[in-house]
Image 1 (cartoon, rainbow, N blue to C red):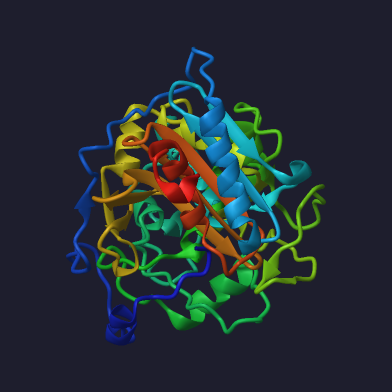
Image 2: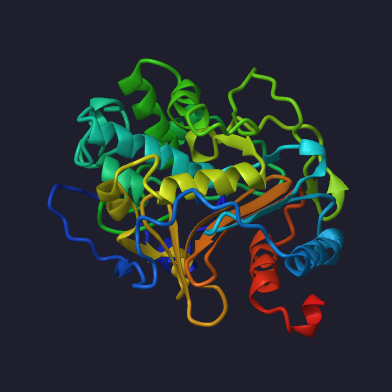
Length: 372
C-alpha cells in the first residue's frame, strides 16, 4: 500500500496546525501490543531438508490454477519452518515489491542505531532543517508514521512525484498534525529515512541497501531501484487486465525501494524476523506495538512491519503488504501455520492477501473440497 488514503475521520479533523511544541501528548488511535501468539525471534533457516508431500504440492499447484485468472502472472512462495519450500515464478521475472521495501528501510535504520551512528530520538533538523517542525520530528516518528508528514494520494493517472517534489509540498502545506501526536501512513516519511541513511553512510541509499541486506542475504533476484539504473526482467504491470506502459519504479525511493520475487521476499522475511539482520532488541522495538492501520480492527503498523491478529483463519502474523501502479504484493510469517508466505501479482486490482491465505489453506485444510 504505497499510496494510501488517510481515514476520513482524521482528514476531516485536520486543520492547519497553528503551533507545535515539544512535549505534546499523543491523542491519536491507541497503540495495540503484539499478539502473544507471535514470539520472536522467529524460526530461522531450518537445518533439516524437509519436503512437502506430493499431496501438499498438488494442493499448492491447485491454488496457482485457481488464481491464474486474477492476474496475468503471479510470483508465489511458501517456506515451512521445518525447511520445506515451494515456489512458482514465471520465467524468473521480477515484480515491484512496493511497500514491502519499507521493512528493509526500517532494518537499515535499526542497524545504524545498533552501531551508535543514529538514535531513535534524533530529530530531522540535523538533516532537513527546512522542513516544517523538523526540530520535533524524530527518527522514531518517521519509522512509526507519527511525524505528521502526509501527502494525500493524487488523482488516478497523475504522474508520480520525486522525493524533492514531495518535500517542496511539505514546505508549502505543513504538517497534518503536530509531530508525535497522531498517526498517518506516510510514504514521504520513509523517503526521508532513505535520505538519513544515505547521509549517515556517505553513499546512496541503494548502495547501502545492497551492501547491508541484498548481498549478505544472497537475494540475487532483488534489485534496489534507482532512476537511470536498468534492471532486467521486470514483468509488465497491469490494471483491470490492461497492460501498462513501462514505468520508472524508482520514484518511491526508500518507501518502496526494490523489485523482487516472492521467493526472495520469503528469504528476506525469514532472515529479518529470525534475528539475522537486526538484533532481538531491535526486533522487539520494531514489532512490540502497532497503531491501527487505516482504522482496521485486526491490522496495526509497528516500525516497518504490519501486525495482524485474525482470530479466525491465519491467526496472528507479522507481515507487510504493498501496492503500486500495476502491482500488488504481500509477505507474512504465520506462527499458527508454521510458514512464511509471499505473493506478488502484476495486476493492481487483485488481492495478494487472498492468494497468501489460499496458500496457507492449501497446507492447513486438506479436507476442504475447494482445495481439491
